[in-house]
Length: 125
Length: 125
Image (cartoon, rainbow over all chains, first blue to last red; front, top):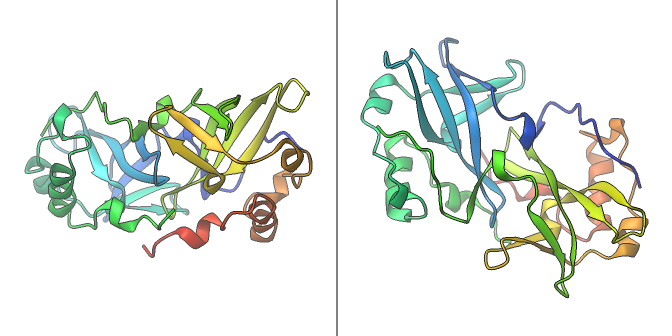
């Protein structure tokens, strides 16, 4: 049995190293970085990436949870690329405390960003 | 658009709060806790939980990456339950640096613990 301290496979990332991963628009513009991921402990899927958008919205820094399916990890960039627009972010449904775990609110958010609900992607346990 | 600072849904966990989640044997014995998760950035799945086993092996603290599918999150416990045995841990394949990203080594590990390869569970992007 070995201790594992290093995992250089760039597809796999430690939960401790998530913070700061860059996020790019499809034209290559850096639009923010990852503050943290929200992981569904039951199905084992990344549900949302909470992105720290800087400048992109002209609002200083702002955090918003983006459905994971709206992000695509590009190994070459070492970051995520997303097709979401400023307008989509401005018009995004409000996430209140009550919204977490309310599937209908979560479904509205996924629909707003044009992606499948993350829980529909989960393979049966 | 709202800032999200709180996410009380206990199914969803922040990548920043992963560390320290308890791991229990099927008889309810606490056998360790999570040091970190390894997340596959491309498919958005939790691939492994690196568990800090204490005492369970009679070896002091020891870290080992357990395939996520060998753990089941129990909302009531606020932790993971696993059926893996001391013997399985003692006999587990060695994870060397080269093993990460080597699917045949990873497949051996999944087979050892009797679970499906995590990449076979991933829904198409």
